[in-house]
Length: 477
Image (cartoon, rainbow, N blue to C red; front, side):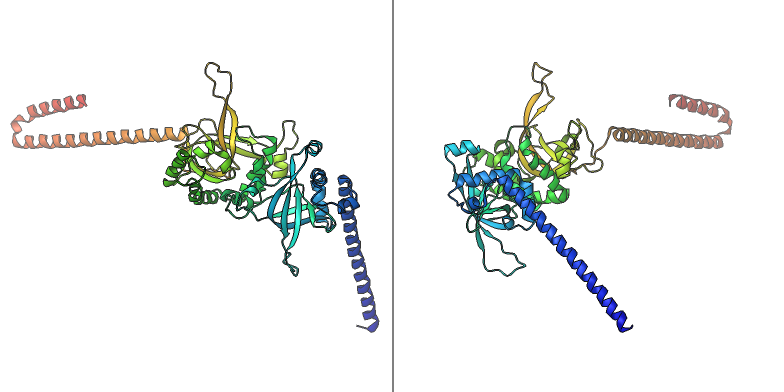
């Protein structure tokens, strides 16, 4: 290659490099501009000037919570700004070490329409990809915290916080909503809650649940979120996890357990000694077991498919769009200790051969997370009023799929089995009869031959008598 050609190639390479660098710089600039625009839009929504934000301290509870309320309305924009690399809007992993209330006076409560807020002390988890100089402290201001955090032994807890930095030293993060995904059981965290956290569920949503009521709009994110989460685990594995949780569950009803009803504790321990969960606590003490993972053996008497792909007006349903749940199955399970009252399981799918219908008798094993004591209406008429629905409550659990304990047999299969058995019996009886007849005929023929050989003179008479006797036997048969 000539020197001139080499110089030409070098020039082309430099031009291409310069062009690609310019494109990268332009893209970076565009990204920064977009992030800046998102932050500006976010701050416009907050309606709080920079100098006022910088002057905020933990003593300004009403102002901090007012910003939190405004950020809550634009949570999506806040997340976009945080992911865009803006220093004021941040997404960070922290360890919450303590919480305390941010009180409001009567006028502030009326103006903001909330009773109080919360202040959380936390440390920022260091970025393992960068040199660490020790944990940095940060204060979180939020509208609410999981109720379990108020119990002894629960904190510290790791969370991912998305919020807006304020204050002179930028160590005050306003987080409108805390999402809690615990990874370890212990203290006020049950095994079921820790497994839900591992599956990506915000366990704090359990606080919104109300017992003895139908499923409310405020509980939809929890319900469909758990239905989505159980899609990440197999039915057999979920049942094994639940079975391994039995001793831990029963230990909460130990003889010396504080504040536990003695009769209920006795029932729980008796069922646990048989290797089974008791259903009584779900009826009598539901709040204590919210989010717990349990497994039950029983008879499924009802299984219905519930479609959630579209709303009544034909619009796409949030369950399908946000959580990927376009249908589920509602099963009523009756256990030996449920006193003819059902446990309602909502599951993602059914195994092959599991029937859908109103009058089933299918033995099955079902594992699921307990959510609430659910109020629903059944078509069982009240006494004296056959047109009225009856209001009923039942434990509501969410699981993956039932495990069939005995293969189901449809009516046609049962009929075929009975008919086949009758046919075999008839065939056997006929064979025995023919065999006996053939043996009797052969013996009689041998007897006649012997008599003919011994007394030729009487042959004609004996033969007639023998034939008459044989005809008489045939007629009797």
